[in-house]
Length: 393
Image 1 (cartoon, rainbow, N blue to C red):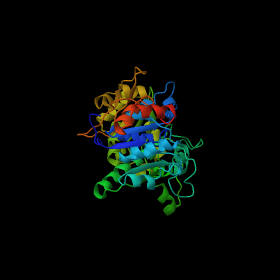
Image 2 (image 1 turned 135 degrees about the horizontal axis):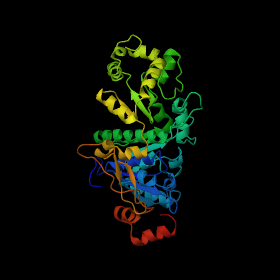
Image 3 (image 1 turned 180 degrees about the vertical axis):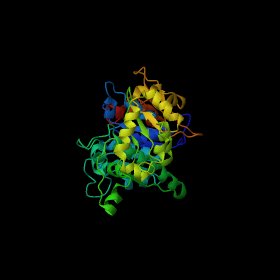
Image 4 (image 1 turned 120 degrees about the vertical axis):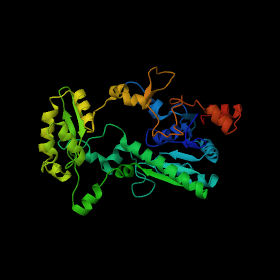
């Protein structure tokens, strides 16, 4: 890659689906060399995922190099050890104990490379009574607490609509890996980054725990609003819906002016955060009656002139057409041998000096076997052919 803050670092990615590989995507986006290990002849199931077309793989595997390797074969495990000698990170999201069964646990690998940072993403972590349970993202979301809060109180708990638990665990794994890298700069020693899905979700749960322990209050589903935070809701217009967030005191005063009733800004029922919370339903009804007479576009423009945060609830077509998305190149078109109109989210966050890039979409299965086995590990063509014929690579 031409740019990226993580240039010069090498990560060996094992595992599949989202919880581990999204961590690899984040690091590859910013310049790390990510060597993705996939089973010969099969590959990561993400190669088949996507609505209508399998377009998820080009995103989650972008900027990665794909090699095929049979991890259940002792010779395949030996090859992993050779790669570890030359790498900074090893990322895996197998069930706890799998790597140890293959003699690829941290004790064995750190003996080969003391500076190795081993990134482990699982449902429940490496320790504790649930450690060896199978743990998909949906289970972590349920146990971490987010499922109980998602959706309307009149319905059973909902999912967010995305694999948020997996992605959060992978993001925390990436954060932990970079913390461990900074520690290695000081000490020369690697360590294990243990990222559990349920804990990654739990980290996002704001004050739900002390609300219970201190006040005996258990937060439940509230639909489109947060109780006692007003006005902050979805409001109907003459041709759709927009979200308005005017819950701060100074913003509420501007909202009152926008509504043509500046006196509401100092009305005792609405003047303070607490008062608006107590009169939330009344306030929402008042705003809803006002917004219905506006078109979405006109109302958004009007609120902008008054400095009131508001926005349309976007879907993919809205994002692609939005001038702000375009100006910041938040979504970019990526070349692909099979898909002719492949657009995807760009690299985030944006770094001013080393911004990273999407250099290529997810690779073909085993596309980089020759480069990694030949150039990095020094295997001869005869050795590679023999291992391939025997199902090892």
